[in-house]
Image (cartoon, rainbow, N blue to C red; front, side, top):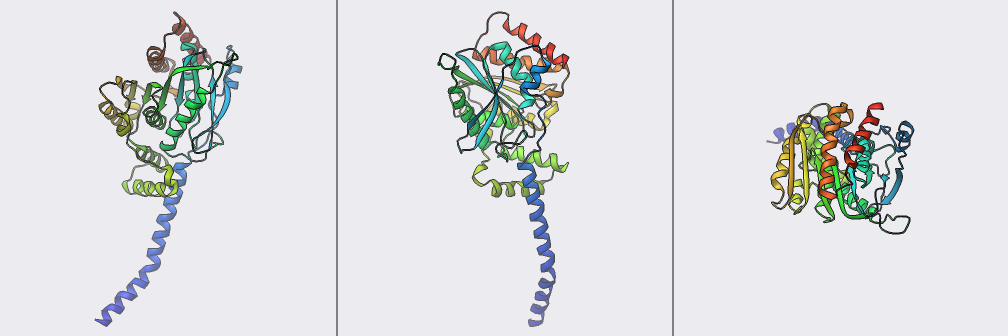
Length: 339
């Protein structure tokens, strides 16, 4: 028996360095992967208000604004003011993109409806982000509530509130999750257009892992999720979209999904089943393209997508003056064609 024990101890001593190397290697890969997915790649904006003004004959007056998030961090966004007392719409982009991906849609929304439009950069996104890392939706939802509070502080030159009582939220993927979660907590959010809605922050995380690695793997997903929970700590909350969607009673909801984002189609359709019966739901789950790819779409495809979103907010939040929608929409599309 003692001889057997000695052999086992010798074997363990021989294997220990190999085990330690494996642990270090797994820990290193996990740390690298977690850092990569929580710090999305930063690119220059596709377009800015200044560039748009130079290339267009319109006197666009979008401004750069900053405000404070609930956790004390800073937020930024472009603001395009609408009519006094009109609703406001916040546009929320997908993981790995930035506010400029939704710039054309926001300009067209403003011109077609005269609503105030705000484009925030979500955490960890955009050139030189003010908050360096994403939380995959939990903190972003809190930031959306802060953005709504910021809109409430806006005043006209006469000192009256600029934004009326109704708020609309548009979001794609990460932005859609944040919009739905924030909308469920703020009754002033009356209309939500949600495109390619993830079932949870973990779903966004898994998609990010697959994007960085070039393939999907259950073990990598497990390592990434465990490492992200440790790294983000309280900033990571994996609440399911269906759980808080049940609080969207009486809201106007537009759900969009398509074959170009098949990963999110089933979760978007599932969300439709989670909404309360009192929700006024419009579902389109077979679109030729979604907000994830509309920035690279042809003029005709992009027009059809933008028109659907604009008409939804126009119908559910307010009614513009006769002829305003068609005239301004044609003008926006014409300018986009020239660019």
